[in-house]
Length: 341
Image 1: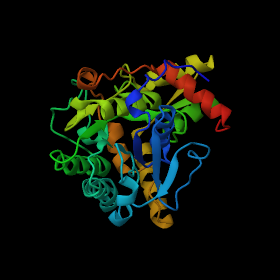
Image 2 (image 1 turned 90 degrees about the vertical axis):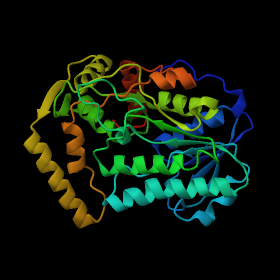
Image 3 (image 1 turned 90 degrees about the horizontal axis):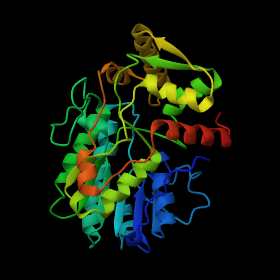
């Protein structure tokens, strides 16, 4: 597998009790892996119905609880030094569900942190979707008012507001990553799969729309930086990869990794909109969240999704290491090794 610059040694985490919500998911499982590597005692909070494939074989203690059932949380949080709140939904059938899970779950967790008699450092994983698109103008920064254009983004803003209400009781840091890719991820993977298997890159909207993206290794780097920084408490930071990209440059990176041409397939917006409506209709019949919907179309139509990492670099020492070519090489190697490709 591709070798990245190593994660820094973090002696403060050795022996520390760290709770990770959403620990069985894409981001959460990588956080668990790195905390274990650092010598932390990790409690991986999961629901009883969770798929534990990414936690199997780790040294983490799997503990069962439900963010929407606060009575299940105090024992999980007892003695915690750090809490990484990664759990949330990115796809849901209704605005209400986004708010129940992303905002309501945050409230339950923070209330339980206060009730457990300790004062753990909490890192809330939010999203660039909370800040909203940048358009073709300057990158969005933390001092700009939130301007979400999706229910998901709105629910993350509400979660941030809830967290701000606990700033005087808990050291809470809020981190907003953009699109995340890398091993175990399933959405950007669809773009990669088309490029690797069928040698074309499906691009909806404008191919030159500027985007912030970040490899999972740098996400973990940023979350641990925030957890260990005194300056992060009570504030919001954007993290992102070294440079903005476009879907065109992502296709270029995959092409370089593969060593062969990847054709661009520009999908007309009427087709994109029709696909969203069809996906919503199918989800209504199946009573499951739509894999693609009209909110995603609004995000695609935005003229840019670029965030500034200036504050994160200054205040928590965040220094992303994985450029798009190295990141795509790592992702493709992992997908191949695990027979996803």
